[in-house]
Length: 372
Image (cartoon, rainbow, N blue to C red; front, side, top):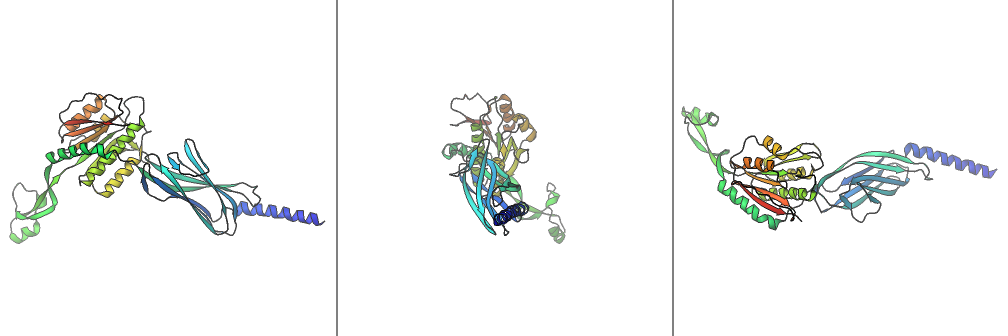
């Protein structure tokens, strides 16, 4: 008889704990995945935190946490990782009552990009590890992986040449923020510059006199279309690195830089159109936009994109084209754009075995950039 009571009690405990765990296992239970940096550069290491928080009296003897990330995030010396088209990571925790667990995972970013983790899966069991309990949790973790730098030693000579072109072609324009004084109004003066207070005091029209500022601007044009059916990602990624490096070098010289590309943004789906700007915030924005370029999306022919984006040329602008494609339509469109500008430059990323085609335009210098 005692054995029956024991068996009955064990059955009651079994079914009771099963009901309790099924109803309460995920109450006040949260999981999060967070990147510990906003941005890193390709080939650098980053860190990701898994955070488990159990805010109730019910322990979880086994909690499996799973998430997936891009396969170009290489988790360093981590177990429970499988990589196919994506990187799948899962970890097992034993979570006691009212416990918080934080686990830090190191990874290496093997390629430029914008990487997100949008969902976490958690599954657990009851005390006897027989009932399978499962739920998904939304996640909003992301990290920018900026493009790396092109070889600075090789880039120094073309950069100095571009700086020389800017200095010889620079010109001045009136700066409305550079106030130098007040003088009598002349018929050729703009009415917007009239100083009405001085006019009221003197009884004659008086106008503000502004100083002049040197204007130098650079426009980087990034063509990422493929010339043939072969999609050479190495050349395209090196092209992006060249834009990143040149932008940083010009901005360090306090020269406004804009970037235009026919490649589309991974988030917005729009082409990269970033007007001229300066400062550290502009460089950060530029790098984020370069990181989000998605080479898998279809691109507009670059000569059409160029003609649509630059209906009017800007005098004194230095245009720098980075394009491994040497199609005739590209060279003609860039030649027309460079005709009324400072002497412009076309950098052609190529493998050593590739042939550079003839291109003749007195307003354009052409430079081969070998990519290993």
